[in-house]
Length: 282
Image 1: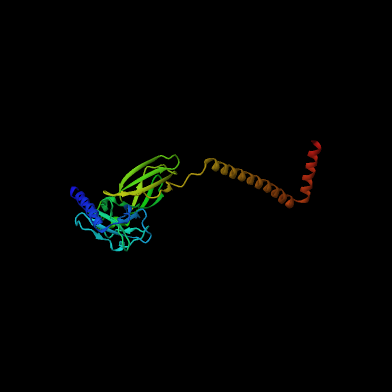
Image 2: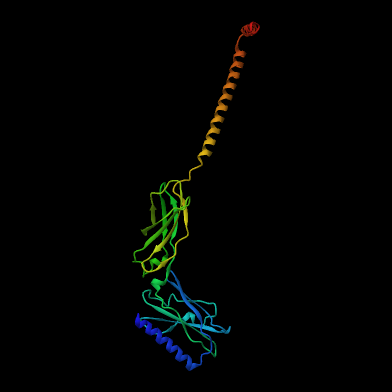
């Protein structure tokens, strides 16, 4: 690391000497930084104060093992506001790189502005896995797909762990699990009929990671309100009772009508008389 710092100091001093020899007059670019997601690296910068609108910008990179600045072919004539893709320039994820930016016009140049040292494998951010959640009684089943970058030749042999953050939506209770990657993962010993939300992130050995969006599911179908069920059952029972009473009343009337139709007239008359006698006695 000491030799690497000496190299950077030498480069800075060389830039200053070259600037004095050529009469640098443009302001140097500022805010030179490198961001990286899934080993895709992007350099951004801001023009220096009073940089003319027709100014262009050149990007060069150097790696610690070569110690020779090389221009990035796609970034030799950038305009203000544009970025530079350094993915191909930073081929070795285990090596340290530095980038620098210079403004220039047809007649003027600025001094170089150098970025911080960048190690692709540790400075990149691994994106979230794709996750789908479903219930299985007192558990959740997670279906997972890792970012494609983890299948690259540099990372395919690395052991990948996942971090799961589980939160119960009812009361906010939460816990975290660290588990090895599997396309299907089961989280057990949960409450039945309860909704849980799960986020997942990759836990690589060298890099940082972004968690996924929360995916929510019930462990089993959510229970219906017990009072609502009681009212429904009571209403159904009352309707059944009224229906039976109506059937009994209708059956009685139907039976009496049939008997009255089929009895002999004399018996019907006698029956009527007996009814009248009974009424008179009463």
